[in-house]
Amino acid sequence: MYGTGFYALTGIHTSHVLVGLISQLYVLWLLVSGRMSSHKTTMFKAVSIYWHFVDLMWLLVASSAYIIGGLV
Image (cartoon, rainbow, N blue to C red):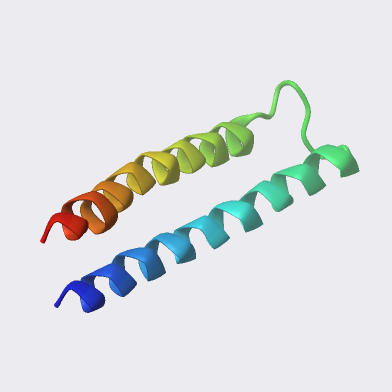
């Protein structure tokens, strides 16, 4: 049961990290190509919020999989 939960949690988190990294690369491409200006920052803000969401979820994954799981 622990192994299933561990790999499910880390697998789902990894997929969200990959989406976040691809999104950040897209925003970088928008910046480099000049398609994003100081007036059009919605995509930048959305990717930033998403990345912070992934950070917070990592705290939950780490605490449930490593700390709590290690006690059992």
